[in-house]
Length: 191
Image (tube, rainbow, N blue to C red; front, side, top):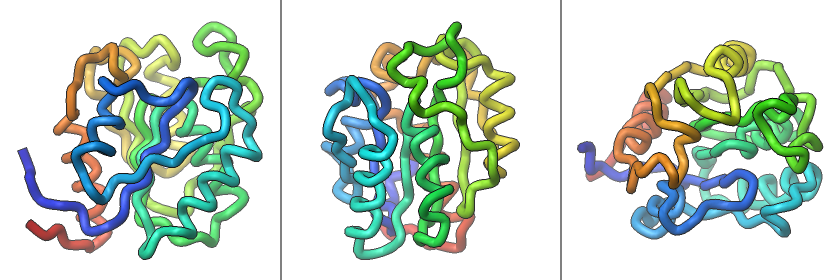
């Protein structure tokens, strides 16, 4: 396990319903000082403009360009935010288990307001992490998102929706992938 500390601020972006206390995003927020949760007005009835504005406020309040760590619906949030705020400096984004908000077979009606999913290249480095048995997105579709966004793609095997139900705890593998993303940008980590 890599115990080095991230040099960039890290903004944590949960998906629909927020992240429970046993979700790896909550573990990161409680145990890693550089992580900060981006709060939304309503986690259960998402409204795109409100969520985008909350993300923009969080980004501009950072002392340095942050890394974004999005889960599920918030992967679509990041893609929409990037279209509106493409000049806002970001170090990179880890896009974990992107929900297919366009699919009636995979996602609930509450997330359809984020459709269509922007399929333009993101203006910052990114990595899409997907699971081969995610009920909210087919692995082929997740790979399509990664290609369209210009992201690296990592299939971590059968881990469901890569959430609390996946029993990942602090998900050290995910933190390592975030560190890899930061280091690839020529940023050093400090002990």
